[in-house]
Length: 314
Image (cartoon, rainbow, N blue to C red; front, side, top):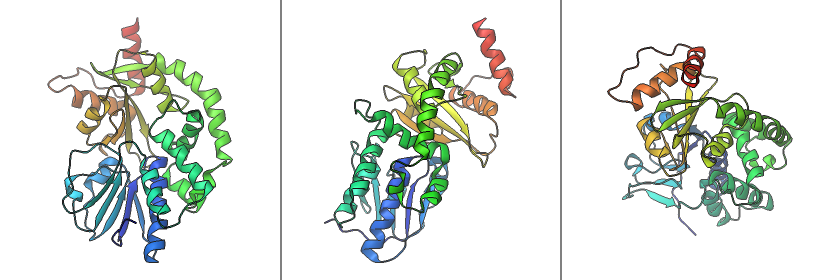
């Protein structure tokens, strides 16, 4: 049985099911081990990198290990690639397992397991590692998409922290309908609306459907000339999130230029607060990813984006 220090805080990734599942599981583990309710905080990559690791003891899950986290009584449970080697912190790391699975294995050492958790952890593992060959790949992505659509803290509140309630949840019917109806429409529209950010990066505009699956299909079918594709999403608080996908490991290099992170082919970042619209985000990304080049006209609205696209296609 692995020995873990008593944490002051549990920190997790806010953007996906893996972060939600692993964070909740670690809270349960801390409750069992130390008979106390440890607070949970969740972050996107940019805000996470700006947060000072001030606590004397912490458990971190689904966020990459980096030198600033190498502190005594800090435990990092993660599956993202890292070049850092811990000297003081405890790193529980496996590239071939989701963070949720790694946390669940710790929970099982203390008897915290159930058939419902077995099932949910398996589905999360399939979706987070994007295991396309799994027969339940489509269903697993419906579960993952719940967090994308309804967001981390909304679902956490709806479930009252009991993630098992996600199994066969009525909202999955919404995901199934969206997938069946919206995805084909969204794929066809997005195929015709890929805009150049740089010679190797394309912005996929989306109107309906599961953004990740649409981009995945564009890459799989080689429907564009860009090895890296990105989508943009404006959160309710005004922050614009960049999601990047590739097939040969190029996406992470782009994410790191944006102070983001993740997997080699699936990663993301948050743009600065000064970038307030999707059109401004396109301009910002073009300037950042094409150093030394200047663009004669700023994109002040989506209409101008479409106008430039139509001009090229004409």
